[in-house]
Length: 152
Image (cartoon, rainbow, N blue to C red; front, side, top):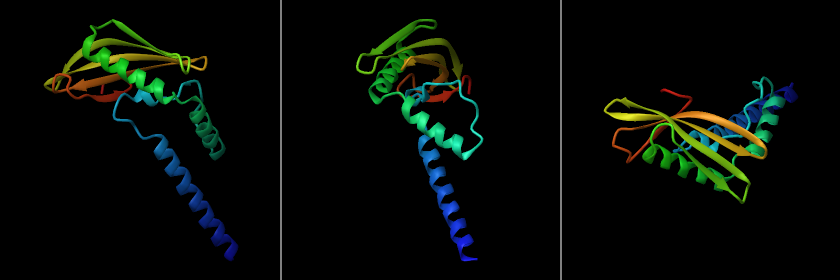
């Protein structure tokens, strides 16, 4: 039956479209992962198309504004390049009433260079999210690679 073939093509088109949206939304920035974070972490795993669409909407509403993300990135680079372990730097964006802190927890020698494990806390729209990340350099801080979630 022809209607079934068109329905299958429509479902394939929908699947390709949703996959491309997810891939674009999940692409990692060249800097810290937390600069592009969504400010909630209390949501359960998505198991349905309806849940995926709802999560896409929530991600667009709760995503950190660009100006705040830039301030956060500046604070991260300042912390990993200048601060001793345990010292906190803070930032505030009055345009969006967003604020954050970055604390370097430890420095680890690794592969001819070193890595710094740091923790970010960002508050936006009455929600706060914390995230641990690892920043590594092999050229004494001229370039950095970032890894989410601890020691990688």
